[in-house]
Image (cartoon, rainbow, N blue to C red; front, side):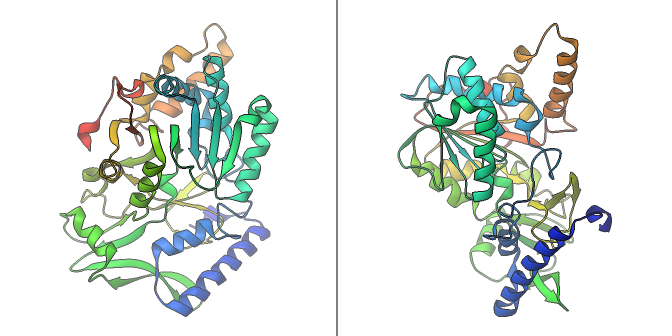
Amino acid sequence: MNNVFDGMDNDSKLLSRKLKCEILREIRERGFMSFSRYMELALYHVELGYYRNGSIKFGEAGDFVTAPEISPLFSACLANQCTQVFSMLPQRTIIEFGAGSGVLAGELMLSLSKLGQPVDEYIIIELSAELKQRQQHVIQQKYASWTSKVKWADRMPEDMTGVVIANEVLDAMPVDVFSMEEDLHECGVVEDRGDLVWGKRLLIDGALKAAIDNLDLRVDGEYRSEINLFLRPWIKSVSRCLKQGVLLLIDYGFPRHEYYHSQRSQGTVMCHYRHRAFDDPLSYPGIHDITAHVDSTAVAEAASDEGMDVMGFANQAGFLMSCGLQTLLTRGNTVAEYQQAQQVKYLTLPSEMGELFKVMACGRGISMELLGFRHNDQLHRL
């Protein structure tokens, strides 16, 4: 574990110590801290949280790389899917949650323009002022002709018509951690001589217990996992604002029967720092990412309960292939062909992003078979 943080600069250490003091102060005032609260502070503290403190997160110089940064082919495939949906809408509007580096927005607008379907409006929902500035810089520097089409907001406008995109958004939502042995316990964060350590408390009642009971788990021996109680309210808020259109969710996860399989007995919470993954979220809060996989079944249930149609579910490889990935490849340029071949491998191979990452579409007022699920729809797995 210590090797993960070798070479950390002093500014990062100072930032993490400040955030740790904030977390300890709250624990001393209130006692046991749920892991969802800890994750919220570690990622979204207004000044010190990972997504708000100014550290580089995306790309080779950051902690992880997302699909749009790996290759523009990803955005080109999404553009093909958006074009199909736009054929049933009065205007071409895209709403993107958590736009990361801004590359997806720029490349998607560029690809749509090449298809003769330029966006009328591109709305980015971004809560981090620091990330908003980075997105504005990237779009102004690399996609200047589309700057006037983009605007930023802190919430989704009401009565929207368009395509809503959430790429690697759900995995960054705070989760609650629980353990099942002889009894059901909530796992959280406590103090031990000035350090942050795991603690647990018996779960007898409340919203968390009810949600876990609803999973109807059948496990033997020691078992630990997590559950996202923010997922359903988020789906509800998006659904109530989407008058007509499609919500595209792209994230890594599993259908419920795989997510909560007895053999996955340590859960899915992971951390990422300088492109290295580790499983100790309590170390150096604020300077590394913390994620949990997505329960795809929970997403589908929440959307259905809000009156949305669950229109498709596929792994990323299947979705990109169905959206015409092969037809987008460069021909006749050996260097470009090689570069794209490497990019395609990363996006589609099961050992990379191809299988673990899933794409789900939920719609309202759209009556068509979506392009991305024509050849690999796996709704039956949910």
